Image (cartoon, rainbow, N blue to C red; front, side, top):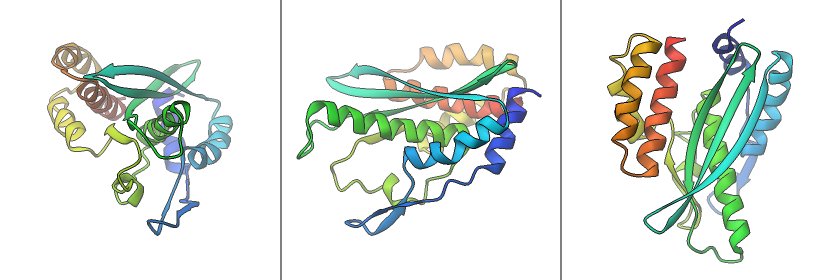
Length: 192
């Protein structure tokens, strides 16, 4: 079975409930850990390995965490990336905790992209009370949607591979790059 077919099965079987509650904002949400708890048995069932990794990048004096969620088997791999910006300060947190929070946030959105989990109606995607890391680019954001629209003309993986270098070369910031990669990954999944 092709990796895209396996991913589709996992996406359709995945149930990741919003098991967390924010008492201050009065909303339910799902964390990165909730998604991992729900998806690990499905990855095992379908014989794929899930990995998460982070890289740190800077742009205009700000620090961004780029999280990459990947699944792979002997047939291939599929990856999605997402960026989150570190808060400059957060009351009660040291620098390592701020980076960890941004990492967790970026990983959650990379997992959302990989497994097609729609958080657009979640309060935690729009309300951080001015303190949390901000999502830079992920499925459903205006920037990703704009790039996705530009990739709709690609009717084959080869077309997409030819269009991608010019698009990525036009990126001016890490946010632009993340949006382009996310849009390409979405279109690639459709073409597989």
